[in-house]
Image (cartoon, rainbow, N blue to C red; front, side, top):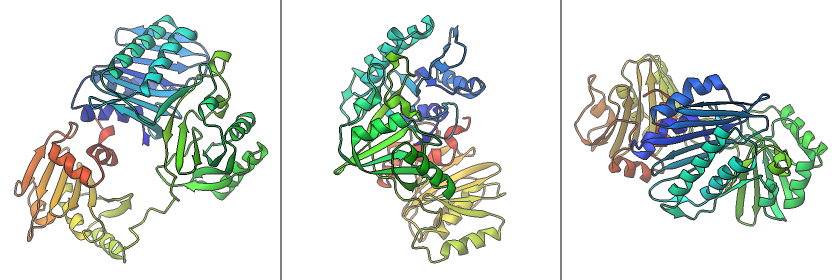
Length: 456
């Protein structure tokens, strides 16, 4: 998923019902210290966390303060964000700068209902780094403390999953992959250049019948051809396939399929880590082996297939009012100079009711936004900054979304069955149940409108 450590921090309170965050660990090779101090550290400390940072630099350095510990070492490290509370844990494994907003991360979560047993291997990695590689004493102490806290949390309610945490402290990542043959191997968007020995070792290990190169759908034909040519020069013949928006577009993902089982290794973009070990002086690497689904073919952002021109007519009608309408991955987005986005969203929901089930409309103006999820007779409204809450309505005929929400500046209470506030908290179970019936959740919706990355 395309997230960032800052997004994970902003969603912590909502996912944990405002439980405090005790520890925040950030590991990454490309570390923007100004972005770190400007956003990530304050966000973590506002939640009550002690901050620990491990990065890479030409000159080693360390900083220890009462509320944070930084260490920079002269070897590559993986990209990891770890959030630990009294009952909850979030571990995100990524590829790219951890201070960059839009990167693909694989996120593993646990809470009172169960902690994935795979996190035991992450704890072992933290403890091993502290004791078996050269680190500043302050950072080694912090990693040991984090490993102990993670172990204590894990033992409260461990649950078995098909996910595995893997690393290269003693053995290369390649040793954690199955021995082939496999039906298909997919390499996701190594940007430029390939490590020929690592690719040769990978294909020898998996013995794939077919090899695919997944590239961003936005790449030009020439870039795709150059990428395929680079692979060929490294001894790997691959079919080039664009991947759909929202699916991994970086070199830190290797997928393989054998029969009806498909697995993926998420790791750093340096494929040399497949064959190198940290104990022999190579960079540190950490990743996840997870079940995977094939990436769909990319498609243009457009109206649903069954649209008969109705969306265009609605867009033209709204344009006459000075508003714009776009369709984006299941959500209709309206923007304009309106001062109250709630009646605008209600109007558009009504206009598009025949186009989707449910209808999701996000309206944003200069002073706020509103999100409506509509499946007759239930209507869920979220808005901010005005009325920062979830409001669940029942709208029975002859009432409509516009008649219920279109009048005046205030928010109607007619038909209101549940109010759950504020937005950054876990909503009432009735709201959760409604969203689950639609195959979504409140975090996904808030993330889609950018609420999770905005100051509360």
